[in-house]
Structures are given as structure tokens and as C-alpha cells.
Length: 288
Image 1 (cartoon, rainbow, N blue to C red):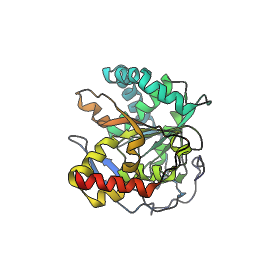
Image 2 (image 1 turned 120 degrees about the vertical axis):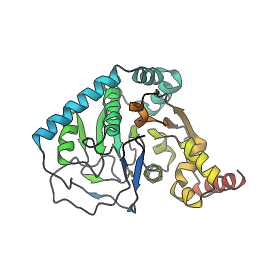
Image 3 (image 1 turned 45 degrees about the horizontal axis):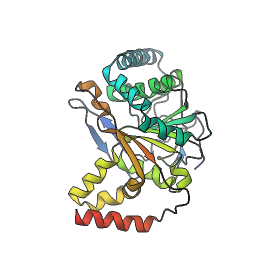
């Protein structure tokens, strides 16, 4: 996979996009999972709903502005930024950057910005974080359920929308922050699989669901299907430094519950032998 896919251009839409889609719902803002097979290769994509409605666009931009203002003045955001400034986080960021001054941000699986508040909260946090830290460069976004109107709003907010469904298989040929709140485990696993080399993993920062939480789930339930869908995720845990973020009690921030920073610190001279690593994972899950 190339380091960066092309940004959106208008071609004939493909309504048969294969993806694991996560949709928020009301109440506790948990998500229903519409699971479909994830194909092995990326393919071109444009919104099924390509129409750009100026009225919808204006309303969505206003919703995003209100959301970001609320976030920026919140206790949660203050804690979030303070944590990034701590040595335990900032030192890892500096290591990933190396001689580079910026790293790109890739946002996968953000969901429908028009229909649901959690995706707006998640996107708002990403944009505000870029605003605060000069080391974050270009921001690229992809979710197959984005509409033409949502795509236009993302561009107005300074993001690029990919025209290729990478299925999470972006290789980190340069330092990259993957921002993936509440994505499916398979998508994280696709990302790790595509970067299953020491030099690539060491260029990645991943902000998303707690890998420790996934490991505990597999250990408790001993689910062989769960292991197969998370095999790279589980295998990389021994090389992962994970730092959970602190949320507040307000339901508004449940969109960011159980999120963690993940850094992969691996000796450059080490060879990643996946088979042996999975034997260790299988052994641990059997004896837990």
C-alpha cells in the first residue's frame, strides 16, 4: 500500500463497498455493528450520496463549531492536552518523529457526522489536537458512509478525504498518527498486519480502543474467533506502551471512553516472528 491514497475525485460510486461499519445509537451511545467481509485489497471509492446540499453543509459546520467550542473549554480537553505534554507521552512522540518535524494524521472509521453526535466529538478532538500541536501535519479521513455534504465539510475543516478504501492497510512509510476511536478490532488488525515490520511499527502512533482491553476479553472468554480477528493486535501487545486517557462523567464524552495512546517500541535489530509470537498468545489464552 502506498503511503498516501489519492484524495477524493468524482467517479461512479460503488454501492457494494465492503467494510465493517460502526454506527452509534441513542441512549448510552453504544454502537450496533454491521459486520461484512473485509476484502484483501483496497479499491476506489466515492460517496454513494454525492449530492452536496448547501443548507445541510451550513448546519453541519455550525454543529461542528459548537461541538469544538464545548470541547475546547472542557475539563476533559484540558486533561487530554496535559497528558500529551507529560514526558511519558511526549518522549514517545519525539522518538516516532525522529528527524521529521511533522507526522500526518490518518482518521479511519469516523462515522456519520450529520446523523450522530459521537463522530462530531471524535472529529472535533482530532482537529483541536492538530491546532494545539505543531508536530501534527496533514489530516486524511476515510469512512465509507460519508456523504458528499460531509466530505465538503471535512474539506472546509482542513481535512482531505481519501478516494481509496484502504481497509486500514496504510503502510507507515513516514511517521503517522492513526486516529481510530471505536473502530472494529479487525481494522486495527489490518493496520498492524500491513505494518508488520520493526521499522514500520516504530513509525506509528495509534489512538484508539485499548489493546489491553482486547487482550483481557480474549483471556476471559477464550474465544478462538476473537483471537483470529485480533491476532496481530494480540501479538504486538508485548511491544506496546499503552496510556489510557481520562474521561469525565458527562455522557457527552462517552464517545471517547476506553481510548488509549499506543506506541510500539521495538529493537531495530529484532526480527518479528509472527508464528512464535502467536504460540505465546495462544498459550496465555489457554492457561488464563
